[in-house]
Length: 257
Length: 333
Image (cartoon, rainbow over all chains, first blue to last red; front, side, top):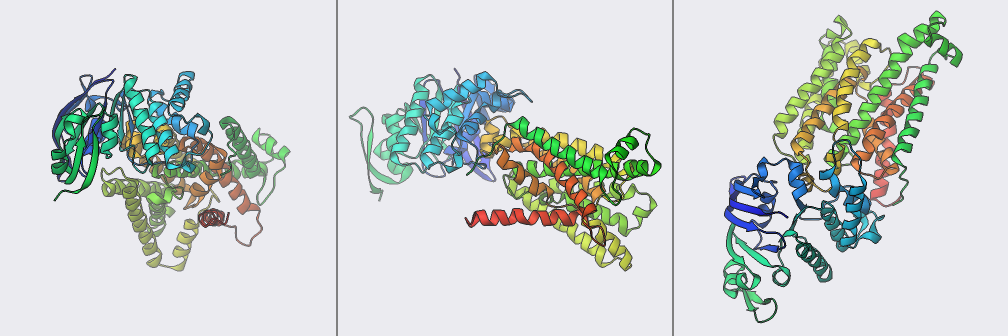
């Protein structure tokens, strides 16, 4: 179990302030979606949570500042699925998923039985067991997304941050990925995903953080956050939000006048 | 894609056997061939004087250098390809080998090489270290491979320009010829003095590069993912650059500029492994030792009027690798 707290976090990239004074807390067993328009600072906020960009304020994991934590410790607490499906060498799926065990390996040691078992579990949860001997660079986008997800699961960290995990996937594979994120949260994981698809965010997330211009505009359940007024102001779109069902549904009409 | 991945230890054992065979061949054959019996007698201190001189003064230092320089170049190529995530990377992309060559050229140009045999390798190593300092200043704190490659090209181009200038201004054709000959790369007439200069540098370089295996594996997923897997990118880069500069600097210092070994060897090794960057490091070092020793044996036994230069042979070996890439890109093969 793990808790992540953002305490007045600000990030400046070059001369541009990308994230301003963001405070929020994330608890285990919750799937939180970070939504907002392009360039709002969603990915930068996610990267600040992993100490991948220098930030003002503090990001704390179970009370410890991430910048004071050795990288390997942080790596064992938060697994990360970065944006894009970067893969520079044609590794087999099994070898690729095995990279998730790197934070657990002592210097000059080999993969242990514990590691092999974790790799097996991760491949099973992401449903890629039958792909284990395939070359990861030769897979389809949907298969590759599942494999990279399995790589993150192999870390067996209590928290998972995924940056735009649905990008360039068809609706079926988008649902597969959201199901996997949901399952992680249901199993007690702290899950944060940067998302663009508001319908899927509303359907799957317990909580949404709506970010605009580097600031939190709204924080709450999808029904609380996704209102027609906010969508018009933040995204500049004209939309109707139905909140009568189990989750809010959004109908887009076009650009707001 | 075909997979020929061998179990790691069988690959290492096979390459080690090949290297051993190459080393024994390198001790046996040359202008005067030694029989195995004469070699063993000389090695045990009971042989004839001629065989002893050939073995200890000529062939042994040469063989040790071929093994060490080849290992360093192969390993540096494998580590840099992993770090830069580019299968065409080799030590020269960082400008190190060119800068070391310029140091050697300066020693010849200013007549320092004639003062003491140690001056040339010393200046060459100094050139490599100077290039490293320049590389750090130019690439700054940026962690992207592109910045590093651009800085490396700048440093390398500067070193090549300096070398051309020395050739251009050389006082007489003999000096120019001497520089040219050195630049072609060779292990001819090397002594244990050269071994003493090169081996410590190569040992330090090898240790620093072999340490990076896991970081290079993590970089397969890109820089953010590698850091999120616990990799310290700054330290990785520091180890890699210093290891390459010291190791390759020490190697070029005694052998002259020998290209393509760092490019060829990882390419030959990679298909025999699981293709992860860490899996090719040690095998590339052993394979590099075998390749350069065999190439050096080749220059001795191929009958030519002048002895072929080692750098010329490795350059010819490099061509098919580029052609192979080209054919793969064009999907001819």
